[in-house]
Image (cartoon, rainbow, N blue to C red; front, side, top):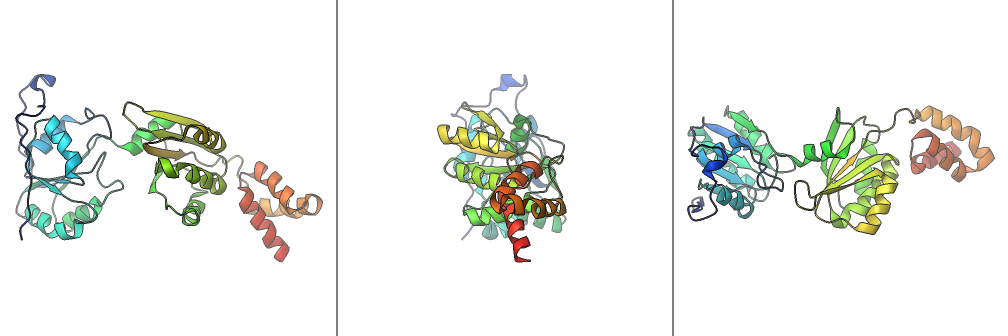
Length: 304
């Protein structure tokens, strides 16, 4: 059974307005290869002219969700062949796509929104293409990661994107613990129903550092909540944000972060006087370590 490609008749749909660029929109000749094309994350006008050229001229467009991608194609009067390519069918589709690329076709890969390969399955296709000596061309554009970062007001010279955290608290805390001392802004995707529990786990494992919660980027109801984890948690308790959320945690405040040996020394001095719980609370506030971590270190000292 062959692969069925879909073409959309866009002649009667809302066309790409020729007057927007002052020129008649024509296809360009694409070199054979795989094109990684960014598409809007919300506002449909956030697409580059080069992306439109690639979509209009490609022999084949691979889309994570053809129903979602159809909106862009119709909006801009594009009727290139469209094929679904997502995590559930990528393994099955890969041989067909590589065959098209080997035969000299131009193939465009797009995701549901933003830049492909960021929290989507496209990297396996890119890796397979490179292994086959097929050219790969990135066409940059919209990205929720970068849009969230520049809106956050957090340090942007170093950052790490970690995608979606696990849904279970225990697994989430294990991963967060490994991020604790990374000297960079941490960026995560999250959903409305999980965001409060995720923020609470972040505060427990990362400490009460600066954070930004930005949502519905480039859309009508775009907004942001800023402050420490405690500030944002209090706000979320009252507002219950919905929609597509980007969470950003600032780097640890290095001037406040003690070395582990310093924490252990402080515990030895203060526990006899204050007790483990009170000493852990005071040392946590002064050292930048979470109360939980300080308390666990205190327990280990008792056992030794």
